Length: 178
Image (cartoon, rainbow, N blue to C red; front, side):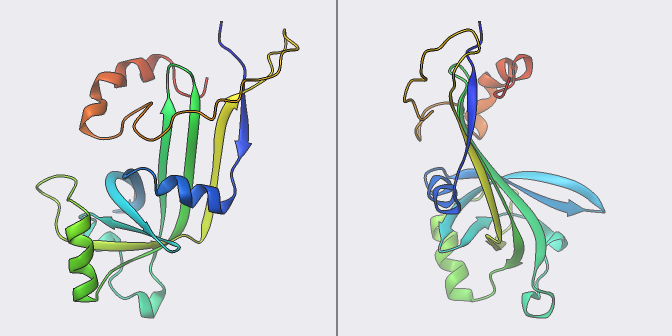
């Protein structure tokens, strides 16, 4: 039997703090007029997500002229066995980091996702930040209160990146949300 779950909305501050606890997410952008998604490493600085990726012309190089390119950024930490965890989506304007010293500093912190990635350092302003946490809920057949579990902590649950392949088959047959 699948236990009931509740969705608890997260504040902007909670979302940004959780993003800072994981190092991998997905950037969603437009490529040749179609949606594209790419896994990337990230760090959080102030209200920006800094990534290192090869997105080419998909991201503007003139943020002062047009304000940057609108993208989405998504990260999560889901325990697929317990069906608990969190999911965060950020929408904002992305632009290349053009200050040479600043870009070099980020390159030292952020390893490229793979050996074909270029040295593009991209800053995404966190304009719209939404997220939720899946927590144990009250089952319709039970009057018991949910346990106080907050879902997986960093280093637990679903892994993102190359080590996640072993967990992919189980997610295909029973997704993390139902």
